[in-house]
Length: 213
Image 1 (cartoon, one colour):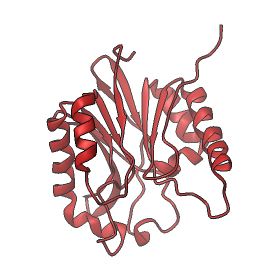
Image 2 (image 1 turned 90 degrees about the vertical axis):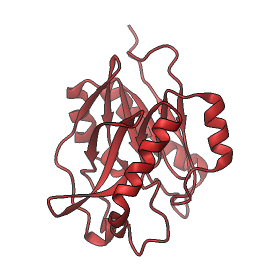
Image 3 (image 1 turned 180 degrees about the vertical axis):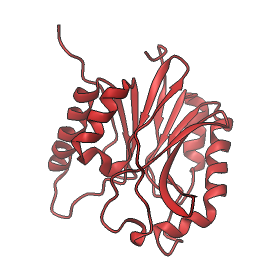
Image 4 (image 1 turned 135 degrees about the vertical axis):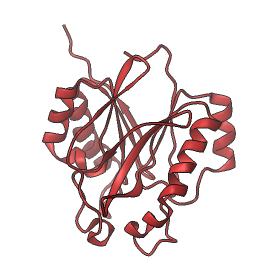
């Protein structure tokens, strides 16, 4: 169970520009327990492709650590391109006040992600933070029912879902909302967890479905 109250801030902005000073001031006043960032939050247009951001993986992780220290909180999301055993991954870290709790590698990649240089992850994970359990999914993971089914078995209290979630050219706001609502409300019902979905544009969501007695 979450501490009551647990304050969660969701940051929506253009990837690669960092944390705006105006946002920093709001966060300092709000004093969140958790900050959630979107997929590839630190990866902007300066990179030739997404995978090339691996060159700055240490700096990107250090920035996430620094923010978690500055705001004295847990940070989830802001996925980075990281490397392990010669493979590149779209990786989400959980960092609490500068300390790494763990990470999750995106399993279901979108077509040609990182110009085909990103390797899919292979396992779903759960992390203990304070007195409750945290799960992670990334963007296209939510389009596969087995992702939520696997998370249900791990019994999370909260699942971070950093996404890119772009608008489709011919899609209205209402259609986008309905599409996201179907995916994320369904996922919340499947897992019984609070879902925190953050995208650089479109709709931010924090969803929980409770079963009625």
